[in-house]
Structures are given as C-alpha cells and as structure tokens.
Image 1 (cartoon, rainbow, N blue to C red):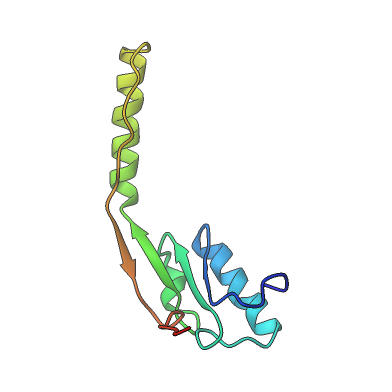
Image 2 (tube, helix red, strand yellow):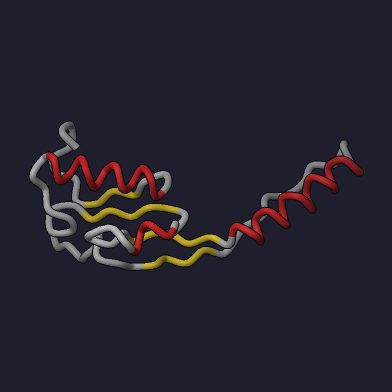
Length: 103
C-alpha cells in the first residue's frame, strides 16, 4: 500500500490475508471501503463478524474435496493420462468492505 498509493481495491489470497490488509489500512489511516475496497477468498465465518464486514469469494469446500479425491483416484488408476483442468463455481459475497469508485 505504501508503494502504490493510487490503489483503490485489493483482492487478497484468502480471508486471513484480507483481514491483515484491513488492519494495515486502518494503521495507515485509510478508511475501508472509502479509500480502499478489500475482498478475501474462502468466506470464513469471521468475515461477517469483523467491522467493516469483509466481502469474500465463497467456494464449496466439500465439492472441491470430493472432486480432488475423485481426480486423485483417476490419476492413480491411469498414471499416463493427462487430465484437463476443472472449474469450480464460486459466489461473490458482497459486504461492507467494498464499494464502487469512480475515476
């Protein structure tokens, strides 16, 4: 943030990193979302408790685990096969840490 003061939004690797970014912004005197919008990834329970509540990308962890296990068993059964990528649906859960900005 100190190296890119023009930054208006941040998409963190996961919710815990986003919460750390929120703390860093507050320490720098930046208001969320007025100065910087922040989005996390995972939609952990804590995101709805903090203030401002954290916007996050929700993923179905059970489905990811099921598909990963299925793929692992396929790879063991057919080790010479190259398997295609699999896409997983996600949901953007908008909360108080994001807002529209206009340049």
